[in-house]
Image (cartoon, rainbow, N blue to C red; front, side):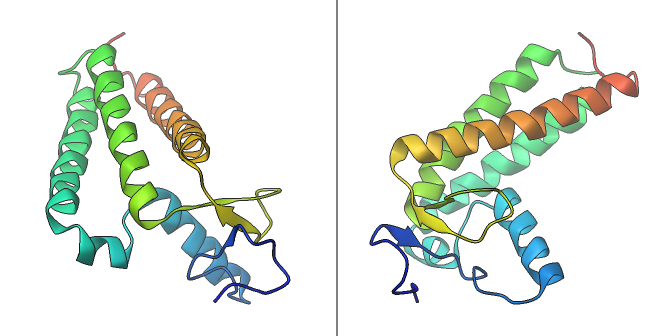
Length: 142
């Protein structure tokens, strides 16, 4: 339920009003990593099933990169493809973005450009962290 004091374009994820800090942080982390919603899984089974296959393939790509079997360009291509898919899934099921500082709990309904920016920046940070980790371990061919 959306708080009546929020603007009319406000949105609230299921964990938005949890009082506990640990529970809120765990839910935030899960929300960033898992793009599917319960309602989206029920309504768009074929689209979501394809997404699980894409997610598994993206994971295999990162593992192959860690084993030195793929060039960085292939990993970037897969990561970009995953990001496009994630934008579409989130627009269908988790159509909200944070409004204000990252530590806040104010959300709003995401327009397509909001979601593109959110997913793009989030995946850029995750991808950069994975690239740096693989490079530091000497596992990535550049």
